[in-house]
Image (tube, rainbow, N blue to C red; front, top):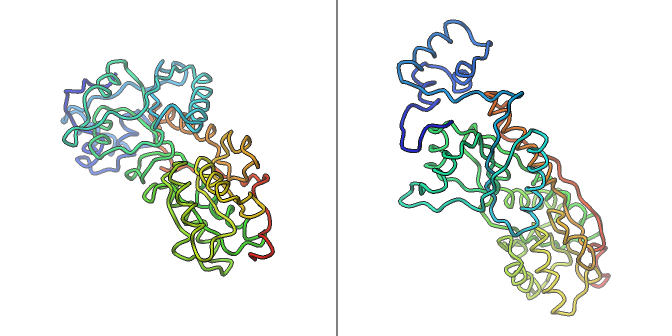
Length: 347
């Protein structure tokens, strides 16, 4: 069990600093690993005893803890459904139960409210998966203080050094989307990103820019817009693109949900997909197949990302030190009916 939320004590980082070793080395000593020099082990052990470090019980693969937490951004999206499916399947295989929460409790004065964290400690959760979460430094420190292992699934921002995360190869996905449109003959290609500061969105836009530059194509400033991963906002951004003196013949939208807003804006202007304008999405959610015409999109393996994150969490719970902080799974372009060569008069 983690210590109560009112307790204080040294973190593993403090122990490592006092002993003059790295955090992974201190973790090896805490978890009884044998690949530590005797003098180093003795020095770290002395610091552990002197500072009163409370060791978290080690997770045994043969006797897994019963419970982990999954914190998702929301529960009413196809994205969340895919993540839940991946976590549930992997948790079932590991003999774990999962408590699902929608969003983090808001903070007051930079300090997390006690409700969610107290519940986490009270029910004895052995670890946490955060999906699309943006934690504050205080929240990171709180989790570290309570010895609660956690893994980020597609974090909003770059997590602190050493924090494990799992995501998709977003940059390469942006490259493949743009290259597909370039290969069809498009030269006037716009992009509608998600949130400007979100890690995955900026990587997708950067991939698009890289492919355009490699093809020797200029990207006018007006061709790069942001739709906040929202269908209504992207609908407005597409209307703005259509008002340009030289509108694009193709649009790469950085999510399938935003592509629906693009479809609506085009229909309102009497334009057809892909006869007048080609559209590429990102995610490959179910609506990408259901919409007419079916959406060409970049598939990111959401369920596989979630399952990979859970397996990483299990290793952390067993006391293993992660080999690398970031794990990226491959994306893949899925070509359907929403892309075609540009109209002859617009080429």
